[in-house]
Length: 184
Image 1 (cartoon, one colour):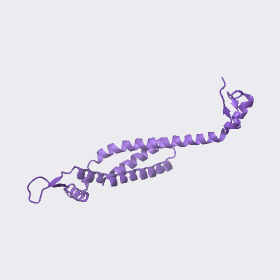
Image 2 (image 1 turned 30 degrees about the horizontal axis):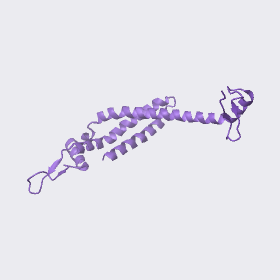
Image 3 (image 1 turned 90 degrees about the vertical axis):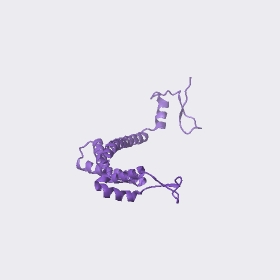
Image 4 (image 1 turned 45 degrees about the vertical axis):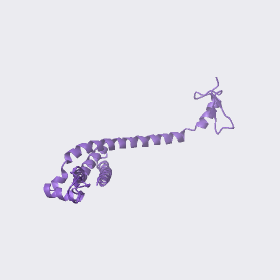
């Protein structure tokens, strides 16, 4: 049940956040990107909490139930083993029969207060880092294409430009390219 809850929660948040972000950027192109990510994460996490909360209630109730000892067949002596009173499906039926469907949403407010800020911060930072890394890699890529170290060094070797004196720049045929040697 716990693995199902985590997988469902993560799938809901990622899917809904991407969809909400797309709708926001399409409907309000003037909205700052960071704000769009924050609003999309807010909506996605609230909806995910609503969807996943029944699993949280059932999981919590199954884990905190009292364990009943099973006694030996003759009824005397110490417990032979421990048994759970009920499983997840029985817990679901018992919760709905005693508390109604509202019982499956106990603790929803605290779940929202815990998960929404975390999700907003996580997705906002993730999108800011993605944007910064994308811009940084594009800058490095264009810089590497426009800067030819070997040609610049050869120019510096002949003219003493770019802070490299002709005495410091040497071209050794045994090395793959020009090298700088510091002569003191």
